[in-house]
Length: 414
Image (tube, rainbow, N blue to C red; front, side, top):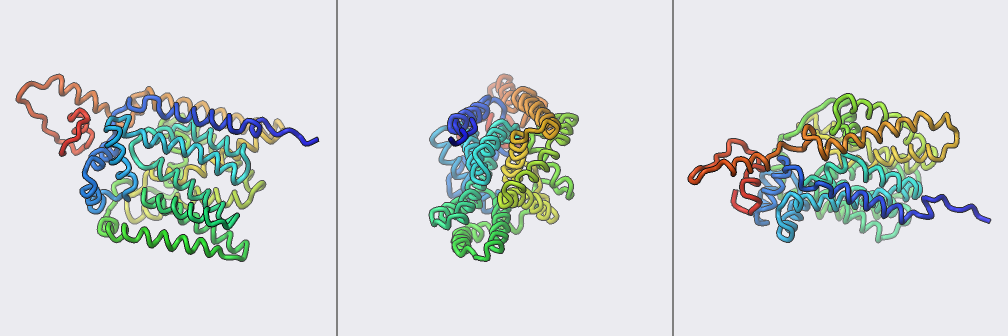
């Protein structure tokens, strides 16, 4: 008589559906409540333009590839340009990211790892914040996971359908955000290691890579002047900051006061180490994939920021899936361990992370001190209430959110 499967296996689909519904609810909750922040206003202003003008903006002004802006351009035609509508595509990408985490976790270890990773992303304040943000970060992160899943399956099976899927998701990723190139670099390192291990070069990888390069060259040629002349508008940070700050952000530290952010720091580092060790013991190839997935973008952005101020925690969302996979691996190790002295401290760390996570979510939804932007909607409503016939409103700030709210969300030439 064969032993019965663990409950997580017997009810895998039901649990996953529950996680996805929870993820959707948390991302839809108060979706249009906060005013647009500056970058969201830029999304609106740029995407409002005719396509020819939008492409010209991306050629000379905005250092972003075209997939996201053109998607929002088409979406606004269908759904309008309210805060809710502008952010909804990020909600969809965020929920699909949760589903993709279940898939990649199941692929590299087992279904329990996938469910744990999906639950972590579903509940994570950092992921929820950007899933309620009208920018491309959830979409490029999703495409990075789908690209990695396709590559793993292609290397394992050699089937062309996976190689084609890898090429398509990779191409969409780099056409969505330039930081997707860090995912391509980590994947290249993984393929190189796998090639040396197998002593057989995957020529399909080279073929698909060449096709992707050829298909991306027109955009590089089109936007070359901006890419080479762009001086950066973010930050430059040191080695410690370039690693520490994204890892803190991944746990929701940006939505916590400093003392609670430090509790997060104390809690997640041991779990990150435990997850890495546990995954290495169980699935060395999976551990290598995950560690490269996390570290290569962090190192790459640090190196790039030595030349231009282009560091920001939100740009490194592309590396966050690996972080949650390692934390999920630590949780799975705790679940599988039957020795109390092995699990007591890790469980206390998990409880600390859960507590600070709830606090971070509460701050995101309800605490104005952690709002993503000033209450521009209220400011402009108050200005409208006090306006008198014949008066004019003169903007002295370049913030695109001000004309957005002054127009009462009606398209206009700005």
